[in-house]
Length: 317
Image 1: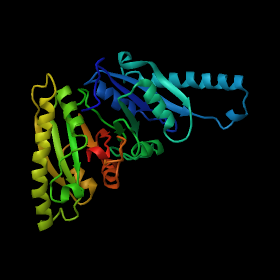
Image 2 (image 1 turned 45 degrees about the horizontal axis):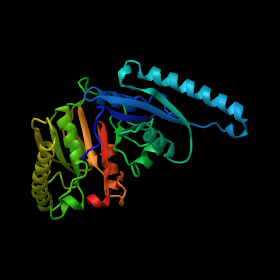
Image 3 (image 1 turned 30 degrees about the horizontal axis):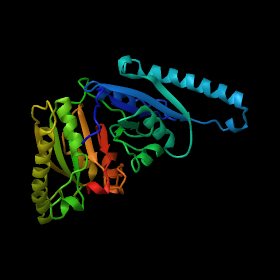
Image 4 (image 1 turned 60 degrees about the vertical axis):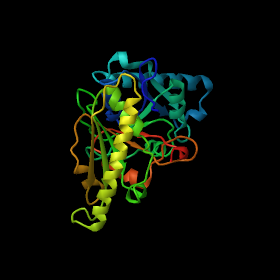
């Protein structure tokens, strides 16, 4: 139902380290923030490649790679000091691998680590509380088979950890049509997270409606259709909760959020330092993976809190 803590009790997280950004602690802070609410094991991964390694002898190459790995390990340990307790670090907390094409090295590390989640940060030059994907993040937003965490720039996170889970319904044909949508990707994950952590679940339907500033029949119709949709989402969230052993009930709130453009729609909602924003991806073939469409991609750019995207397949459509 949801890739959350396994039998051994720890959420295994791989954090992608952006070596081009010397101040890229947001992804690490995101992982540590989850660790305040859940048992976690974190491993930090980066890639490296020198332009002249191809001309090295095998012996020199091994020495160069060993030095690079030792240097990276020191960088990670320094970055984690005061951020992530030693008990929540993997035995091999830093993994430096030689760069190959695309995101394959990150996938290899995630598979070896038996990861439950991948977390990435934003580009270096990004406004506060906004997210701009790196090239690796952009690829994973269209291919990750694991839940993908995205950390906006300059996050301020609650010292108490996750205090509320917000599940986002993004305005699309599935919402603005006849409202007969039955499946809500990522909802089970969001509801399970809320139940396990013991926090409220907020379900918000977002619409960047250009008519939001004035009353219109179209907007009224959207409100009516979406309110009915929210009732079904809430009922499914309760159903998920009822299947979780030890869950003592779930506090669920639903609301509509619209505005002229995604920024105003998102800013019309009150956010807390302890909010985790969950959303499901669009269907992406038979293989279960993340696929972020254009509307979802625009929405994520303005997300002021940590984002978690759950993978989805056509079989769930």
